[in-house]
Image (cartoon, rainbow, N blue to C red; front, side):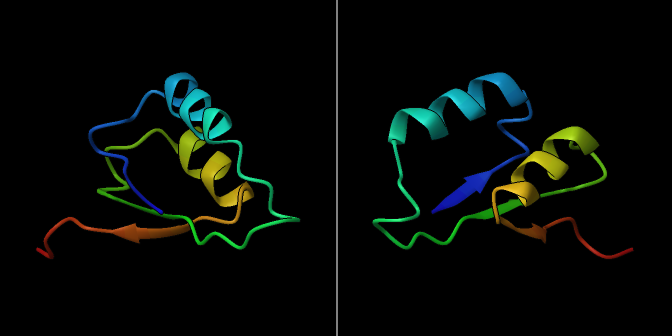
Length: 63
């Protein structure tokens, strides 16, 4: 599952959507990947997604 965190930086609504999907890690294997510019995303959201096992991928261009 891919999440574009640059367009979804509000933690509450994003967690509500993830809960609504009702994914049971004991019954199904799901890889969660969160993509975005991690300099623009709240650190608390990054930590929360990482705690769920998400791979955090930085998408901003290199300088």
